[in-house]
Length: 425
Ligand code: AMP
Ligand code: GLY
Image 1 (tube, protein in one colour):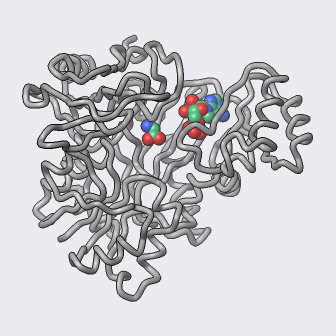
Image 2 (cartoon, protein in one colour):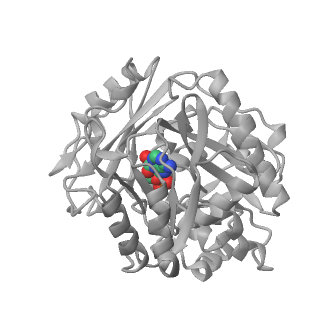
């Protein structure tokens, strides 16, 4: 097969690393890719939102499958673009239809879906600039802290958790009336705060059948002890040690099954990943969000634990035959630590030369934000490298990641030294 993978982060490097191990994969293109994917596949300089350019490339290179990493092309309807084009409809796209991608593209759509299909989620209401005063009244009926969510895509920054009622009202006005998150906050979901431990459940579905992938937990805050600003994710661990069979069974019967059945009842075409964000409140899993793609850096620990051929899985997704495949999982733990550019998630520099990559032993370095510059690998984003290791438990795995990070260097590099700190007890 000739596969085109869209994206340029650590998630895509991990997908590429796994897909090229498949005997079914003859040629792998990554658009736009990074220095890591360039080593193992062919990078293509394509804008992933320019569907016409993707069409031309796919026809010229006789692409036989498209795998979509990030949410943006999905929310913009790349699945439907291929399906509705006579020249492209024979090429399967791994990802949901535009309607399915609304589960991530609109918080309100996701909440309506959850309520309609009786899937446990926090109580909520949604408001616009016209109903901002009603929103303030609704806040008065809730207990602090207050959870305000911009309806649309806001690059992971659209959720505010505020302890003070007056401040919550001010922020609600900022979002609705002063477009704090641009068009994304022209509608705001106000939600009941859930007090518990967060975890993520990853599902691959062909729209009828599904496979639950290994659990993972990421560390979103920039600072140690989960302090400071939110980032895309500073590290991850798989499996999550406190998720036992009883909790998993609840997640499957109360959340995963009704989600997939909901797709069928609502006529939502969905052939891709569902990333379900959960909070475990007294052993009751409650959904806080859907994403329509894999997590990053969760992919860098989930995919390395999958023994089953990923291309075979994608083929089964395309052919709606996922029930015919057994998913084999590596029993070892995997951890990843994200090495970032100092200043991230605020202002940071790019273009710093990275050294020591050739000295890494017994870890896999997935490139998150890098490019080649005159034969050298240089940083090209806030999140730069994800260093993944295996171990019999996560402590053993994390030790290896840190030992290898010690060999890496670029100017102003930073990483959290406490990934997994909350899992020790
Ligand atoms: P989201 O973008 O929906 O994942 O929200 C970002 C973060 O806000 C989550 O990772 C949670 O830590 C937190 N969060 C979202 N919704 C709630 C809620 N209802 N109760 C408590 N925390 C929440
Ligand atoms: N690591 C969280 C995400 O990919 O959204």
